Image 1 (tube, rainbow over the protein chains, first blue to last red):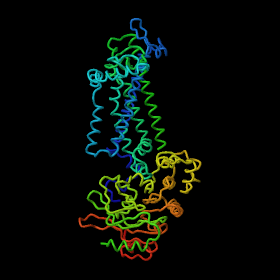
Image 2: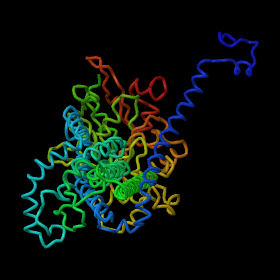
Image 3: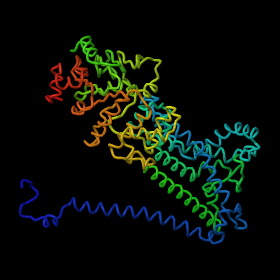
Image 4: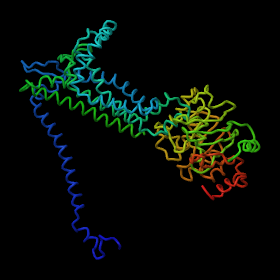
Length: 320
Length: 274
């Protein structure tokens, strides 16, 4: 009765029909968000369509045999993707093998109370800074600093363990293994930052509960905190894997672009993105189509990784 | 202010039987802030002791010193002496992990691990080096916590799928699975409905045959129902203006509720404040 904006004579219908600027803005905002989300979907469809249509001649020519062929011969117009698929997957897996234990370990260290807060915060900041370094910088650093630095060690591994197929060739200056190590450094910040967030956000009652049962810190971390934070940790690993699979510049600079599958990790290799980066400039006709076919494969690979991540994360969240 | 020596005499007169935990002139600090001042309090074996008092009186703080869980809080410090079976709990040679294996704890909010019901109980037993039949231990612990019949068909399901009251009984089950001497309970029913609360109170009557129980509660009826002895804590403003907690009176529960010796206790149990 005392409200100044509602008069007693107006019915609910009448006041609902009256013009209100806030209500109009509400409608406009609704349609704006619809437009934007349709727009982003349209871009995705556009990209997928372009990939498919430009890759189509290569798909029609080579079929699925493309996936298993090691030939890349622009003169005879024969193309295959096996070395690139192999190199992309293997370099990413090796990168994960190094980055996951290291990254999760650092995340645990940073989420425990080992260090006072005023030291922790700058460390966390520096780690996130690692993610901001452009990949071409990583590539240059790899070529001029890291690979020469690590080559003697790899030579030693080859000398001692050369009978293992993975280390059977003398380490080349451009090679799969060193590339994977640089990739590992590049994806570390992702794993550390997201794993740490997931560990920090765990309720403190979990830790107290474990300590209250007489668990040591190690037992608490390994058997309670890490399993509880697993969905976030797996999410971080999948994001990192996505980055490693698609990483172009550092791989193109470091991996040597050898168009064959070599079991030895110390030999030059190739990845999908490195091949595309190297060849797109002078490619035309069927070669360009084959490059798009490769791009399509890479997109499907990363799509599978992302879907797997969704499935795994949601499965572990059900447990929680 | 209370006189420590008078208080100690009162305790010696009223507590019968073996003493498991002895609290001698204990003060607890967080940094420079004194949370608890000069407490003398003995916990007798196989009895239920309730800590009651208004918020901020330091009863939970003291409880957490009995299994050195306050070690987790930066700046927390204990003065005076807390002995468990004659051994100083804060002796540098004492490992807090060992303390917590003998003095278990049930928390205010149920905090089962995000594991299966079975593994929630097996976890504590495994880390304590239990070598016997794990299935048997899980069943025995769940029966001991009056939970077995409700969960026996879903031991593989997550502990978090249970209701709040069931979760709390699961937490009790995992505590008794490690066979501690003492079980500390920090307001174990404050997040539960009245029926779950009654079940846990019934449980405590059974548990004290085997365990010594110290329970912090805001609920005076609960203290009068479950406790053999009751300690009333109060808070008072100190010289610097910050409030500290202290023990006002500690006696048989009937005496505390029916014939308290201190006016403050009388006021509190009759609901005149707090």
